[in-house]
Image (cartoon, rainbow, N blue to C red; front, side, top):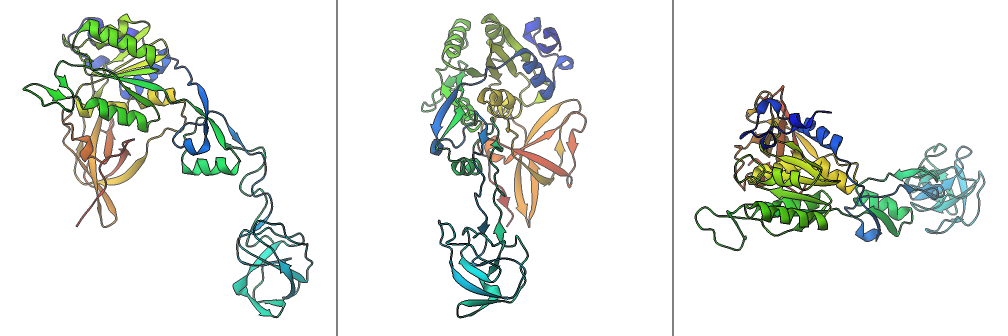
Length: 428
């Protein structure tokens, strides 16, 4: 584990700027963070199955019985014993939702619908279009092998099987499985409460009209939407001015009422940037990473008070949201209890040069257009102070430290934003 002086290159060492040679790459920063912080597992609660979408499963889902519980037809047709002659006598039919009325022998058949229960004595189904009817007799025009046109017992789920593991985020497929298992209610992790504090004398309410030098407080809403998409419960807290006592009181109150805190602004190294020193004052481990070798978002702070994370994001809108999505996401995931948190990605062809910087990680927003079935990605100018930048982007391309450039015509992988992004454009 790196020593704290190596992880805190900025004002924690009495310097007035970040020392680039001691900044950590994003992956190193997250490793350093989890080496120092053990996030408490979220509490468990039970909710109705219909309210479980988007929640995180807190206990393994175990199949209590085989599914299907019996062999079922996958075609409308006739249940038969394979082999034997082509002529079979119809001796009744299978009704949906009921057991077969009786068994059959090699010379008999039962009409059977798609999904119907296979009768004893049958091992296959011949589709209705492959037979000729002669009164109460069928003449098969095709041979059918044993097991054909049916689903065997336990082909989907087997009794005792762990179907869904704890830590899985529940979507439509998972809810379908849980319903099949008979789970009218389900144990899920409680959503962690993430307090959101905007800092800065220049910020005003969104409904107010800015005077010269003022800006509307937009970051809190972008951060709140991203946190909600990641499975947390955003808690919007009062804005704080650039005052040490006010920030200390606000952060202490936020930690009392929330499981984690996200602050925007005040994480750089100027005289007004108070976040690192206040986090250090409130208790160990305090600031763990201050400054990351990344663009945008270099002045990011990752810390904790006890087991509660404190994430200090830059004040610039694009930087704040990008860092939460691309760097701090594993911290949010740990608070929710989720284990399957890989972000969605799409592959495309670079329409223009994606340019980074040797030795740094750059997150480059990009728009995507569909040109005759080919997805083309175009980098957007990286202006971290532009609030509209990420709204114009479909996602972002990560340029690594050793391969900082992607030439036009080369493949790129875009990571999609958790809470949406611009749609893929279609070339006219």
